[in-house]
Length: 134
Image 1 (cartoon, one colour):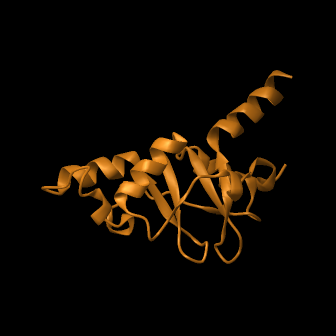
Image 2 (cartoon, one colour):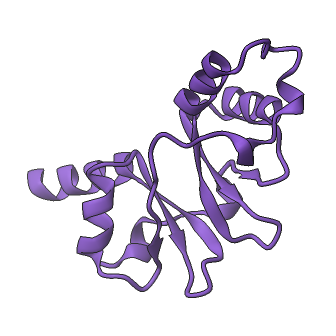
């Protein structure tokens, strides 16, 4: 079993780009029903992850910010309260599992840090549940 066996590929993952605004992020999160979403730069490199909590804390910390002005806030300016680590596609399975213990998903990148997709903690749990109970 390797990391690639758990990969939910990029073409099936909702993500934002670094040029997105806070409004874009809220709309995308609402549309895909994620609580956190990967951010990629213009070259497809993994930049970070934005959570619903990050958006809420930004609203709380910014006087005058409301739903009508969110389009003015670039997502790269929003402080990320948790650092979501990524894993290389060729890394050891144990490295990915250690990250999945603390993250809902683990972003997967290639050796140049190009985003390939995610590994969802849900899929890991389902896999191990099936194999333990069989």
